[in-house]
Amino acid sequence: MARVSVLLPAYNAQATLAHCLAQLASQSYRDWEAILIDSSPGPECEQIVRSSFPDVRLIRSARRLLPHEALNLGVQAGSGELLVFLDPDAYAREHWLEHLVAAQDGYGGVILGGVACYGSRWVDLGAHLCKFDKWLPFSAARLLEEGPTVNYLLPRALFDLHGPFDAGSRHADTLLSWRLRAAGTPIRLEPSAVVEHHHLHSWGSLLVERFARGRGFGEIRLLWEPVSRPRLVWILAASVLPLRLLSQLGRVWKNAHSARMPWVFVLSFPVLCSGLYAWLLGESVTYLQHLLQAGPRPR
Image 1 (tube, helix red, strand yellow):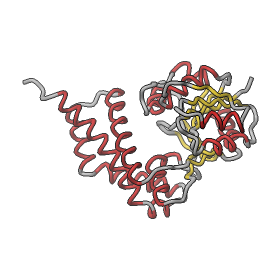
Image 2: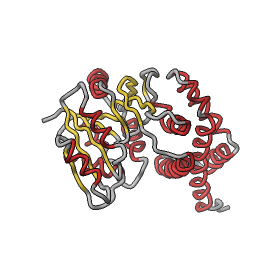
Image 3: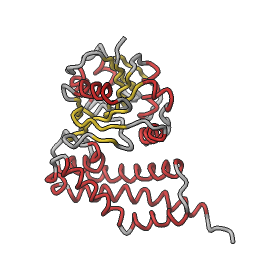
């Protein structure tokens, strides 16, 4: 029985899957199993696994699964005491698992790894800072509030207590992180446990994706914590003006500078700025709909 179960959801991931699994196979840490949960409509991902990676356990679903719904299935099928979530478009460096497991042994709780950018296109760099500025490699190890399941380790015992993922939400990793933090579980960044994320976006598709993600984040935020009407109006105004955009740009600059990547911030600024603002506009639509549905307060 392996100590670590590495779980990967796949949907039409054939462009990156072979390289992802090849990097996983080269890990210096060896006490692990890999489970791929594939809900693609075609056979391409299955063929990659069966032809080149016979040690990877394959679970096929005839129904399309959102990523975290697929991960729930993988957790049920895996045997490891430690669960590691990895995306099929992320390429693990040789000592990735070794560093993740060592950090968990040393500190406990949830361990998030560093996320580097695989591509070097202008849009790749901007997309990467939009999505992963909090988890850049080469930055300092520290406690965080949340993390993405592109590079995420937690003990099965914690998942059993605070899981499963909310299968219908694309922000289910954020919700699980919030539940863990509310229960007092530390979430620690270990930036030396690095995967390289392969971005496949055009500038336009990035903006569409960020807008949709912003809308989804607004929905889970409203579900997670009550927000008074005046505060919601303030958040909406700050998003549109755009005061929140300036605040987020300041955060990204700080994180990029800490990770010794200020040149990436400068080079990719138009893509970065538009991606952040697309997210805020998506949030704003959600908050505006909530305000309109709530209607005016009765006198």
